Image 1 (cartoon, rainbow, N blue to C red):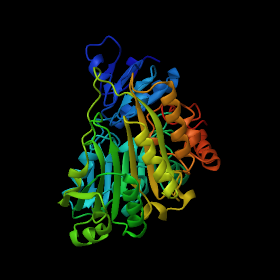
Image 2 (tube, rainbow, N blue to C red; image 1 turned 30 degrees about the vertical axis):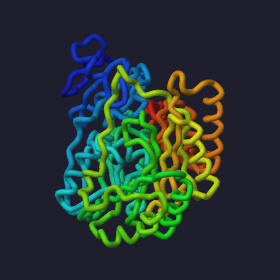
Image 3 (cartoon, helix red, strand yellow; image 1 turned 135 degrees about the vertical axis):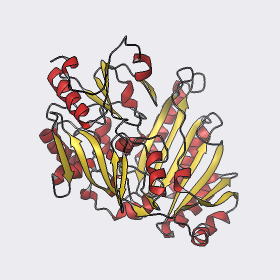
Image 4 (cartoon, rainbow, N blue to C red; image 1 turned 90 degrees about the vertical axis):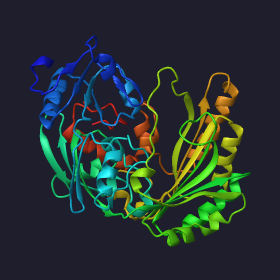
Length: 438
């Protein structure tokens, strides 16, 4: 079967074509696939997958393009970013598989609605949702995938199926956190929430962060679920945030009085200063991430993430120590619980519904900054922190290591996902992801 025989409405781009260099660039890097198809319709997706199946080509699906999998050589890159329509009907929202969260947030805001999405405007709806999706509304509404009520999916053999809790319910279960293992989702159906706006507070931290984190932990243990917070401590070299330790709090709603009351103990803690407080439109909370710069690639990252059942004093001390012992490092905490914890563990593939905090830490592996001893120490320090968790979050693992999936899913969940995989993708064409083996 020739790729030129496909019934597609867009060009197939190969190495050497005039637009190859631009087509193979994605948000997080530069790809080296065998070919790229920019799908303009569901029929384009069907044709591309029939070709990939016939030629035994692995498929990498590109939406927002933040995934590390775009850099794995070979295979067929299926770019669905043009499938970005967004339609609102009451609180039901239909979103094209190639849409980005910034566009979704702006569209919903015009209707007084919101969805729990990621933190970055240019992140794709597809990748984030299929991996679970921890965002600013995770305590209010749960994961992005918890709001998913249906989908249109193109299977490995080019069949288009409608998926819901009543139509292919086991496949629907797998889509709520099982990743892009089962087909190309060309449309996501979400149930949105009324959202007149948000209240945002930003607080600086001076001195030892340990006491402040203990206050923050205690505040969130009793806080209304409308409140979600993030703690970050970053070095001057990190372009994604101002240097130093800070806390950002987002309240789902426009009640400034309630938000301030929930944060009062934090605001009064020693060493904490209020930098910003007030109402915002939710789309303005989503940040813009810089695109890949080949002249200044991101350094290596020694660390990882974990889902913590409890942010106990030992975890706090270890996270603070990691940042102190590695000057070029980042530590991040995101509060969980609330609606996230309301979902039964076996209701979705997403791990660790008992987690109350998401933690991430990593040392930047910059030449001349980490020698072998320092690198080994950072690896061990992170391993000690991860051991306190009950799962890892795949969307925050920028690695194409095939062993990652086994760390993400408990054995019973993996076995159930594998059964779904055997039904819908027995040839494992969709393996450019945190892969579930059929």
